[in-house]
Length: 123
Image (cartoon, rainbow, N blue to C red; front, top):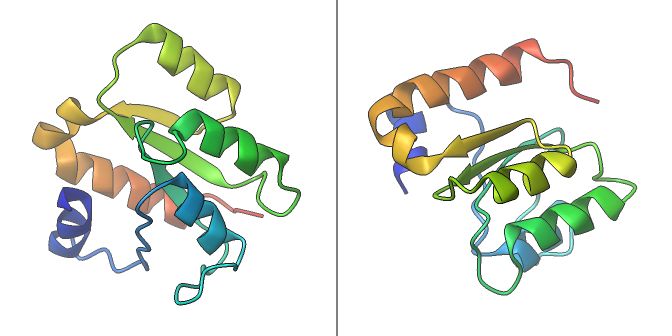
């Protein structure tokens, strides 16, 4: 995945756990996955278009979970739709990033996320 490769190239060595879909992501975050364990706090990079559970449903489930509701989420999507953007921000995301823009600015995106991780005092 380009994001993972970009993190390695930028020498950002935070642990990256990749889920195949929203169902698996929630299982990992809740400690219900057999082989993957999540270290808290975390930042989620979320695609809105996932199999089994789309990004909006994932966000709804995440925000309903008393242990996970404060998780920081950045949406990385191909959707430029203002309705999607509004729906995502209504679910308290930290940022909405259109993927096509990241190809040119992938290093800037990674550095921004790294700075966020270092500077913000997460619960």
